[in-house]
Image (cartoon, rainbow, N blue to C red; front, side, top):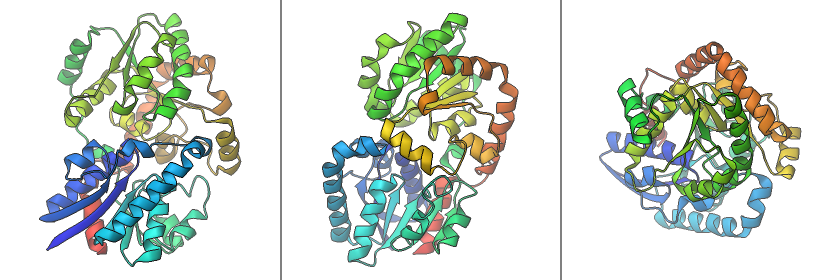
Length: 385
């Protein structure tokens, strides 16, 4: 029996989820046809993207406004393509401002089954979204263990499928030695800098991260900086490097097999003494490598004002939330300053043990040691058909 799937992701983290889900479907179902929008990992699993996924990688209310008309047109185009295909299932992945609008348009015009992968953060802000979703989403695949009750309460089928980060390979000491040699790091300790995977993020965070790391290196001159850039933002990163310490190495994934690029990044994470990262799922990747971290993020002023008034939680870092601790320091909004971040990095180096315990607990609760999340997600999709 053949399976027809329309699948949509809007950013690199969604591409990873979609790629793993598609691999799971390909394992369980002998004949799958895909259409949709996705990045390199989804394309490697069998998708021809309708248009470049990075057109959708925009975050923040004020950041979306200039591109609103274009995004609205893309929403209509994708919904029309779903209706034309008449798939067995529409799977939308994260990026709720885009994906849920597509799902709603499709449901208004058809009875196509709709599955949304990654529960919206109704536990963090805008809790009424779950009830609104119930009108046009049939099933949610949750990646965090505490999310299903929120969806069930709204009347939506929801399956906890685990987070793909727990299924990723773990770098070995030999991998770390290899990447050190490749990057010319020798035995120098280094800090990983992760200013985001979207151009808008890098443009906001690089001017803060660079001076913060300069301050840090003044008191830790033995340290180098390694910046594993996401492919779509490499040029944006390089345009900002005059603000960064001289001891910086940029890891460029372009032109490299995606699996090789991911393995190089994991090895960089594993070998780092500490990381400075933008808020997001990268905190879980760092936790998988047992890399202590400091999280920093700043929004457009309007976005920040709206979010801080609507927030239902006191931390945005997933390691803190999943482990039910607050050991990872955050510097958000007006607190995202070079001086504060530099001091936070120094403190985190001295308090590594508490982060180690929280990271281990996080991986356990996300499903480490069980069936691969992509395969669990695929089983949940097929069970719902």
